[in-house]
Amino acid sequence: MKYTAEMIDFLREKARETSDKGEITRLFNERFGTNKTEGAIKQAMFYRNLCEKRDDKYTPEMMDYLCRNANSFETRAELVRHFNERFGTNKTLSGIQQFLHGRGISADVFFTKEMDTFIIENRELTYSELSQAFNRRFGTQKTKEHIGGRYRKLGLVCSREIKSRANRKYKQEMIDFIRDNLPRATSRRELTQLFNARFNENKDVSSIRSLINRYNLDQNKRTFFTKEMENFLRENVSPNVSYEQLRKIFNEKFGEKRTLSSIQRKCDSLGIGCGSKGNTSRTRKIGSEVVRPQGVYIKGEDGKWRLKQSVLCNARAGERILFYDKNHGNFSPDNMEKVTRGEFQALVKLGMYSEEPEVTKAGITFVRLARRLKELQKKREG
Image (cartoon, rainbow, N blue to C red; front, side, top):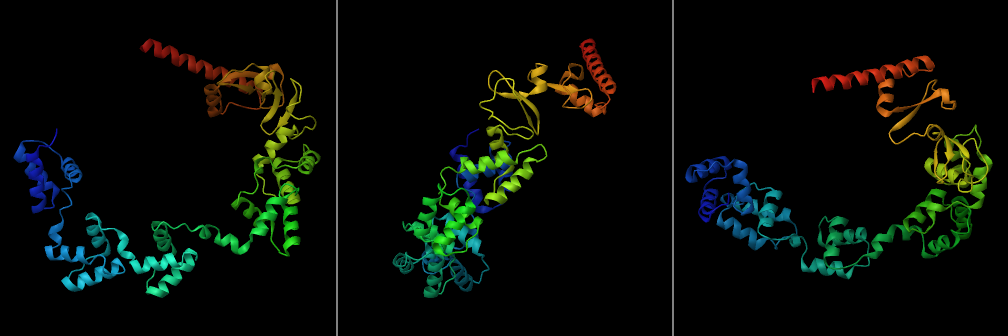
């Protein structure tokens, strides 16, 4: 139901008399014969700017004082202090700020024209340096965030602030050296050694890596594996070495921080997963097998790698291959059977997925019989 002009005038009049929305709602329903809730009345008053009638807490003299003197003090806190001393009140900073904000008086009162001129004249300083100089000059307690916000509002661009910390540590010559030598170095450790020798520094690998990431100097960081790195992976892959162990010795050797998934993906692309060495996965023949942590994979005619048991049993989506003896390396046809995911979950829940093939088979039969009985019972009830 829409609110008529008479209803809106009624709400405006009652808002001046009381701030109790429950009382206003009761009077409204009695006057117009409606059944409005308190929440509906609050919403109607809010969207029509009727609920901001808290001026009864401020006399006309107080409101006039705040509006005239909002720009006369350096901070809002000082304005609040003078206001309370003059009128003998105990207004809070948030209360005064809410009053001024509701009347469109912005936070520009924090900065006078003299302050803005000072910021413009010293724009070559960083935010931290400028805030310190600003506070010494005007006796304020501005933070670098306050200065930065005012800086941007004045339309100034402080490019130096963005790179100030980095520029204190690294000169442009150093950054250019890293960029030029990054493609030539075989590892971050070697690049760090070249950097320290060139500039007589003592930086560690993590510092150089942080510099590279900060300035985005490595455009090929996602595929940054040199021939030496690839040969190292080929030489150190073995059935007795896990991917985690391989990752650790790789990072120690080249001063890297490669993740487990990064090393594993690279090994897969080289066709040197755990337990296998030889051709890359792209050049392997159809039907080739590779051992990975998840199981044995076979390369299909479409060039994709699938689990061996899924290929042998022609499993479809939603089906799972179950090993009667729980040995995922026993691919005998008599040791595998296709089950649905629901059947497998029920089997595991019953504790009948065992290393004993007879127990597992009995469990599968029980699960399927129970499901069939449930279906028949539903049909009879239906």
